[in-house]
Length: 221
Image (cartoon, rainbow, N blue to C red; front, side):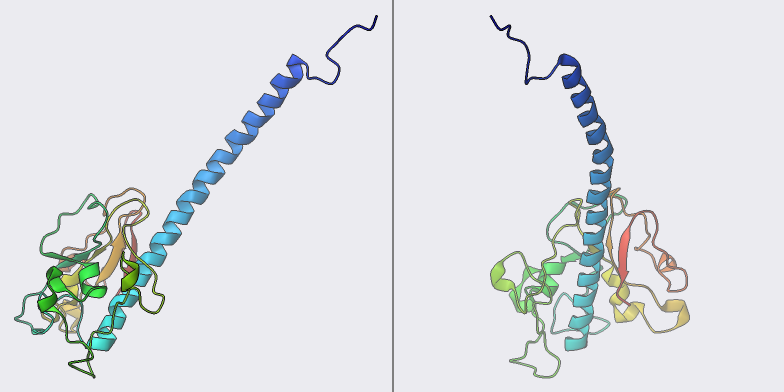
């Protein structure tokens, strides 16, 4: 009679060795995958801040104004303007407290400063020369897309993008060395905290401005 053995199977030692090899490979691949994921998020944030900055510059090229005004038909030094623009979606990052905000969407997607259509900037129907010709970026609703523009929402870590719009106001930029402030689009980056001072003129003078920590920023002007 033929004895049955473990022919064609694996010994306990072989199973243990195989599992050990798999665990070594997994432990080696996890840091690589984590690094690649982090790098991908940083790359996306860089693309997003550059896209928002480009959209704001195009807005200025079309209208002769910056997207800062509370009423798009009243754009003088004495008119009301916003201090900051922020993404509609996402959490406010740490390290900064803001007030007098409008959303990037209301200014660049919907032409509704402060969320009110009656505050709209003049469009081509009313002004063929200096007109709001957006959307300048793609909003959350597909019907607001124009020209295949990409969508920008919260940053890859779930926080809002921020624009220090006060630096775009004519009253805060007279073109002189002593009063020329840097306007930026900024993400708090992986640590989810704004490390770069963007709320004071002394910190955003062109000759002194530096991006700090792991913030991701794109200069508008």
